[in-house]
Image (cartoon, rainbow, N blue to C red):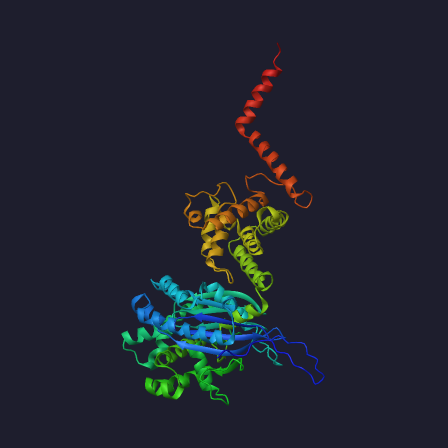
Length: 533
């Protein structure tokens, strides 16, 4: 039965018909992780906030298959396909079209040899196409989700000071450092509850030894915190992840005795001693008892203790006495983006550029030169909009490439554009996909000397459309760079685009005439003409 989602009108006693009121627009977000598939159905209210109507979560052994065999088993593929079929029926009941559904999968799926086949199978079954999110993109969506914490609650100040969001997943841990509401650092670690569980089973560890086991695995996380947080003693640590939401609901049960921490709760504060006491309770209980008392599946019950041990280990390593458990996930960040459209020109652009400038300072580039090249490149981009036909997303890609075009000189001044490409390809930009980072790297590769060639592997690997974009943006970046041997264009503020092109052609001709061989020929002709008859 289809749920009522149609416009309604009423008729008064005088026979007049009232104006029909359209229902709020509804949309959905689906995400596939290492241990579950989740769908959130929400509607956009007048307050420009996403109000969640329904939440559906199903546990799946994707991560277990990847850890055991590096591929997703046929049984798991079929299980996921059936789950998506049920999700599709629920979408039809709400009357939500597929173009209002955002479907994503975490990058952990890339560890499976058959990840592409898996996603194709799901698309054929449900007609829902999933896109893989890179770690930097997930960090950005956690940042968007963080904005909803404490919204509308007086006295909450989660956006003030330094805060670290640590999401404990099945195969990875993702860390996001924020200060005064802005992204400062994003990192993903190959540490998850499934690896901890596997190591515990192989080594025949007892649950009480989990924290000691985690101490050896969380050393890198603690070191990154010390290096990137200004005041280690006063920052706030927010723990996210499904197992942590189970623990939060257990430590702070609500009136409904929910299994997971209610999103309406937002965030709770707990002490590290409380987490340790809860871990000891789990140590003394069997898996069957946890399943019965916590009302979770066997798969989830086995991962609660590893998640708690990771959280306790990180908190103790940096000397924290209390932490926060959040009911949110990066899926709520996707909802925020769906409500606001695509906030590329505001929030994400600001964070991407901050990362770019921080990367430039890290590699000691010439800040004034980079900013001047960027300014000229953007002016050329805007003036030639009709000619190149690129989007605002491409404009941001050009802006980042212009800011970082010379960082390779940190490695070597010789062929520094090659080194720049390598450094950019190995930098994590929160909010940008790996494909967009490849475009930025390619643009910096061709901002001087060499033109794009199909014999270059990094260029040949791009799609035909991306190759064209790289050629256009690299030409703009080269024209804006004073150090480039390409012909310099006059100031865009004083010359029209078409006049600029004509002037560029003239400049190119002058440059050819300025070669050493041309000067020698001119000198000989001048000397001959000056000889007396």
